[in-house]
Image 1 (cartoon, protein in one colour):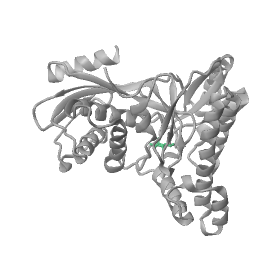
Image 2 (tube, helix red, strand yellow; image 1 turned 90 degrees about the vertical axis):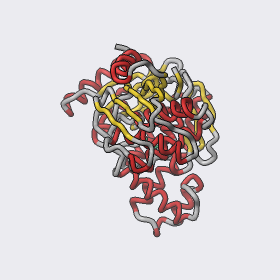
Image 3 (cartoon, rainbow, N blue to C red; image 1 turned 60 degrees about the vertical axis):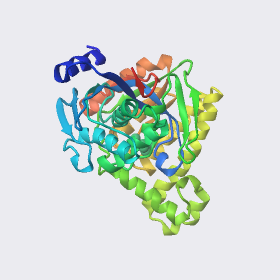
Image 4 (tube, protein in one colour; image 1 turned 120 degrees about the vertical axis):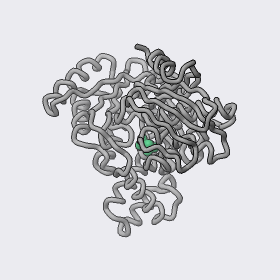
Length: 378
Ligand code: GAF
């Protein structure tokens, strides 16, 4: 059954007459990982996998919401002490609270939601959920007066204040600002962004999901961020965006080996994003791919957010002559993103399925990427 129909049926049986539909997207990131909270550049795009919700104001001060995928119901008020116990519902509660904290309006509503963004795959299902509700509540109760950047920040603050992840802005930005057939280069220091048409002739973008679960809350993700902040402080810059390898080398003796490696990755990654943008404009996919492999190497060896399964998928890509391949997103499991020549797609995917299953007892999941629109009313 179509997502919309499934939601509509559930909504009607629980809450009666229908409401309004909204959706927001998961995201990929071509390059620029762990750079967002360092004031650097990212290069994401929204994808055709979404969280969709039907909402209707209920005239009370209570939120009543049902998750079709989790098969769970939550009911909560809108004051700070009303936080629901279920972690999935805290995303929605957090969005409500962050809107209210900014002086926006949220009243009681009923909602049913479902999605097809794979969970824990590094495709930002949580940002899609936050952006979907932020967009919806802005439309329903605030006449659309909250601007798009603030909607993204509302999602990010929800992660910080209600879900325990000190994430950057990339995922929520991509989910809110996504545009069909375009990637977006965001400068996370100035928040300037630019759309880049992305329809690589003769290539496909494919994700190989290791199906290794990644959990960012209370995870090493926050520790990575702390390392970067420590080094930035030591170098006397606001974020690592303003640091160079020369500065890092000069301070090496005062920095732990671990923090040094983390900072080295971030400083190198900053330039890779810019290189990839230039290469894309020039149609030079070989350079795009080369930088992707370098990013994988850095994420695996210096930033240490990869895992055996993802390194193995990356090795298979190399062996098959795939143009570019790397771990995508926060890490600790999830997907590799692969830029593959059309004619190599099938043999690559076949080999990855077979070899990975032989080694780990299950196949990776395969998703072809279609770059799509972000948050919207349906
Ligand atoms: C996660 C975070 F949510 C993002 O902000 C970003 O830091 C990413 O990891 C790594 O690039 O998705």
